[in-house]
Amino acid sequence: MKRIRIEGGHKLEGTIHISGAKNSAVALVPASLLSDEKVTIDNIPNISDIDALNEILTYLGATVTRDGSIMTIDSSSVVNKGIPEEISKKLRASYYFMSSLLGKYKHVEMYFPGGCAIGARPIDQTLKGYRALGATVIEDGNKYTIDAEELIGSEVYLDMPSVGATINTMLVAVKAKGKTVIENAAKEPEIVNVATFLNNMGAKITGAGTSTIRITGVKRLGSCFTEVIPDRIETGTYIIAGALMGNRLRIENVIPEHVDSLIGKLREMGIPLEEEEDAIVVSCCEKMNKIHVKTQGYPGFATDLQQPLTTLLTQCTGQSVLEETIYENRFQNVPYLNEMGANIKINGKTITIIGPSKLVGKTVVATDLRAGACLVLAGLKAEGETVIENVEHVLRGYENIIEKLTNVGAKIELEEI
Ligand code: EPU
Image (cartoon, rainbow, N blue to C red):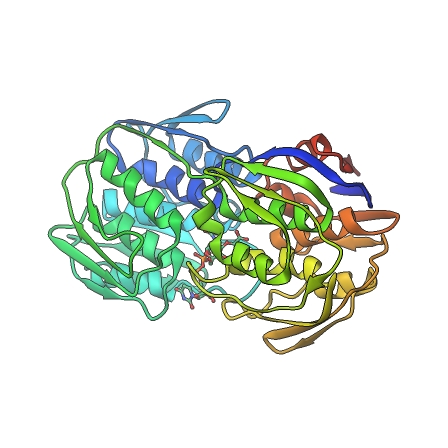
């Protein structure tokens, strides 16, 4: 078990360099299996989710080398065997392997994927995509056995713009015969990153980043090089840290357009922000205005930034409102913020935050990745010492968080218990 200890109240100054996006990298790594040759991916973040995917690659027989942020995957000796439940339940992204293996071998056996406990997170849209492309899906409890004599391109309408179902359908459709059209596709930048990677291998995908993606299947995918885009959620988390405690905190290696919705909200709050070509400079301010935020798919306000933003809203004057529209259980951070002195009420899918509140250090628990990030931010602001337990969740998604925050002036350490 690991915990983070923070002495709050220290200003953050200097530069934080953003790593590769977790939610892109966790799709690119399984997508690499579709290639018949060696692929190289740069800017892979050093987070435990990538270690878990590596375990699956190695289990399947791929040859993986890592040199800093560069990962090379040679799947020419992969054997298509069932992925055990203990491995697949370690993270949500394990189900991208299900699609790569189905696309390549037309048969796959796998278990329901894991991921943060923030809602039910069904996979019905992914299964609908498989079926539309001609696969037969047999569900036996948590286990899925999926077969296709032939994968044939088709029209797939997603009932909601699911990131996972969009990527999964692309991964299968690139190897299907003929043309697939995904309607109501998710538009997240991570989807564009995956489509670019597949196109670099020789796939024929157009429209990624819009709600209609067209894919013409190909017989073979080859070697390629690609780079993971900067993590927009890590970017947003550190921008919020700067809004709480920053003295011209500079966040670099970012794509500012990817965090437009956050920047817009912070400007409404009155927070001073400067945008550079690939950096954002942010400072805290005396008085922040209350706001109303609603989470939405990209380019709307990201659900993954909702919990980190809540910490900042405790410092606004008046009553802020935050509506979570994507997940049904993403307020597990709220009781802990209240223990630290916040005044937040949960009402179904909405929370109201009355501020400003003085936050005081306490011992709290990271229930999931972004709840953990929210509590780290609260610890940076709070008076006294905050101890966050169960921080394995945080380390799943934030590369070198301790070093990055220490380098800009935070008093934060990781302890093994
Ligand atoms: N949904 C269904 N059926 C499906 C698929 C989704 O009902 O078949 C629902 C989900 O239950 C959820 C909504 O649709 O209510 C959106 O789910 P989506 O499929 O878009 O999410 P995901 O692919 O499971 C990814 C990220 C999440 C991020 C969401 C939304 C990865 C590995 N995870 O999840 O990231 O919150 O997209 O942007 O890419 C995180 O990083 O903390 C995280 C949870």
